[in-house]
Image (tube, rainbow, N blue to C red; front, side, top):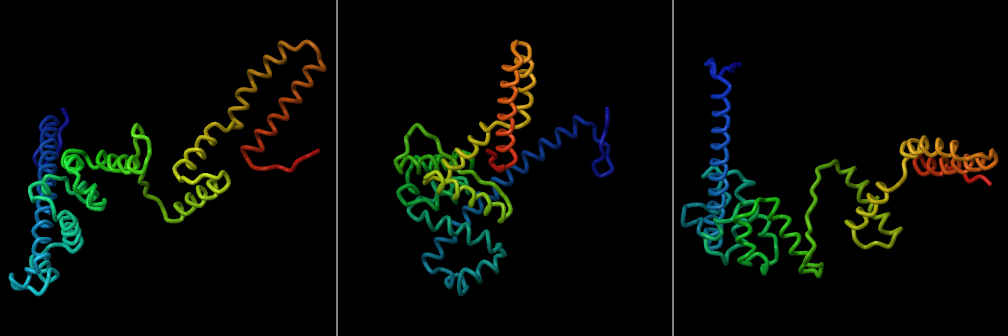
Length: 248
């Protein structure tokens, strides 16, 4: 059995696996505690801010308080902003939500933000499931068929890559009279996938030309069929590598 070292002590594989699984559980519990505590900080901080309570605690404003307590700037303002947009909720209901879901829901219109079913979903769904649920429901409110599911697509890329993609979609929309980016992208990809390729054509030609040579008895007919095939190959080549000059 192979062994590994932990602080100069050899640990058998089975024991190491158990320790790794235990570490995973610890990380998950700790992260749940961290995010829940962030939600508590947001709720209580937003309450103090709404009631101008910083001077009561001996501070001029929340900025001075945050620095004294030692809370990071980005996290402080994020969690206070989330909580502030849920002022009408009870604290317990607010804290039941996952922080990432609460953040996403906080940016929705008030009639969505305070919908009990959506709040329950924010407390029980994973981040991805909840994000997709919000997108789908928004599209349904905008008149899309209720049997359709909608999702957000998030890619990380360079700014210039996004510019190229957005320009391509815009030009495609204008050329084909389409008013929806997603539909235009779908059609672009569909056309690309259905477009014949030179490699595919050559592979198909092996069988096609073999059958033509075997089944055609007359030389003139064989020549005509080969000429037609060569012309078709030229069209495929033009499609694959770019426009060529028309020849009469």
